[in-house]
Length: 580
Ligand code: SER
Image (cartoon, rainbow, N blue to C red; front, side, top):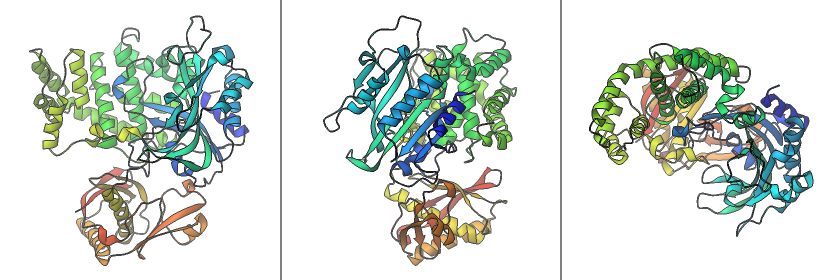
C-alpha cells in the first residue's frame, strides 16, 4: 500500500475526515504564487472559521516551493512535493498529535525507534519552552539524548505573518554509520521528515503576536523524503516515486543515471511540476509573469538540460515523460485526467517557442562569454528579450563557466521595458497572508463588480473560476463558452463604471452558509466555506461570500478598464483589467 493511503487510513481511523487537495494556485490569496504547505488553503479555518468537514481533517496536498528552484539537481530538492497533513481545528492538541505521530511512525511505517529523534521548542523571551511535548516524547520511549531543544528551528510560520506556533520535528537517521548516542539536528545524516506545529498564535505584519481563538494542530509529512527513508535510499530520485521517470529519461537519452544525475533530476523534477501547474484548474499558461513565468522557467530549464544530455529537443520527449507522471498520479488527482491534453499542448507549444531561439541563443551566449568576462546587463537582457532565456537560465549557464551576471544591470533594462517580473523581485514566494494594500483592496471590490456585470452581459451562468490580484492589475477567470465581443466588453466596462459613479455602499454581514446560499449570494467553491460565512454586498448589485477586505464605497475605485480578454482553459475565459 502506498504511503499516502496508509496515512489517510490511519488518520481516518482516528476520527479525521479526508479533505481533497486544493489547487496548486491559491484561490484567494494573492500574496503567494503557489500553495507552499498543506496548511495554506486552511488558513481561514486555522484563524477560527468553522470548516464544513469538522475539526479533525487530513489530506495530501500538492505543494510547490520555488524559492530554491535552482537548487534542484541535488539528491533532495524538488519544486513540487506532496505534503501529508492532519489537522485539529481547536480539537485535540499536543498529547494526541504526538501520540498519533509516534504510533504511525513506529506501528504503521515500522521505523525502528533507535533511528528516531525529535526536536522541541526551547522557548524564547516571550514564549515558554515546550515541556509538554518534551515529556510526551519521553513517555513514549524516545530517550533524552534523542530530544533536542532548539529555538529558531522550532517555531513555524508560513512567511512573515499568519497563524503560527512552536513545533516538534521528527528525524530519521539515514546512514549506514553507527548511530551517535546524542542527536544533533545539524548533522545531516539525521533527516527531518515530519513536523507537528502547535498553532496557537497569530503574528501580524508588524510582528505582534496574539493568541488565536482556538488552539490548532498542523502537521506536515513530506512524501518524497519519507518514501526515500522507507526504501532505504539516500537519493530521493532513486526511490520508487522516480524510478519510472528516471528510467525513461535514461532510455530517451541513451545514457545511464550514474554520471548524469544532475540533468536527469532537473528534467524529472521540472517536468513533474510543469505537469501539475499546467493541469491545475486555474489554467496557468507559460508567460513572463507570476505563475506563468515559473512554468516557463521550468520547461525551458528542462529543455536546456535535455539538450545537454544529447536528447533530440525537437521530439515530444517532454510529453512522453509527462505521460508517465500523469499515469502515476492520476488515481489521486483527477485534474490530471481531465486536463491531460492541456498538459501535452502546453509542453509542446512552449517547446516549439523555445526551440526557435534556443540554438541561436546558445551561440549568442558563447559569443558573449568568449572573452571570459562576466555578463553585463545589456547582454543578459538581450538573451532574455531576443532568445527567450529566462535570466535564471543565463545565470546557470554563466555559473557553469565560473562567470557572473550583472543582475542589477539586467533589472534596469527590464524595468526600462516596463515588464519587471514581480516574481523575480517580490517576496511572493515567502507565503503568508495577503498583504492587501489599498489598491489591492480596490481591485478586490472591482472583482465583485466585474463578476456581477458579466452575469448581466454574458449570462447568469457565468461563474468565477479564479482570481488573482496584484498592485498592478486584477485578473478574473470565468466560465463562458465564447470569446467576448468588443460590444460585450464595452457593456461590461460601462456597467462597472456606472456602479462606481453611483457611489454604492459596500456592506458586510455574517450569516449561516445556508441562508447565504438562499439569499442568492455568489461563491466559488461552496464546500470550502465554513458554516458561518461573511457576505459582502455592494448596493443591490452584488452579493458574494468573501473574506474581504473591500472598500467602503464604490466611488473610491476610479475608472475600470478591461485590458485583455483571452482564453484561459477549455470553457474558461480570462479578463485582465485595471483601475485608472
Ligand atoms: N506547516 C508545517 C510545514 O509545512 C506543518 O504542516 O512543515
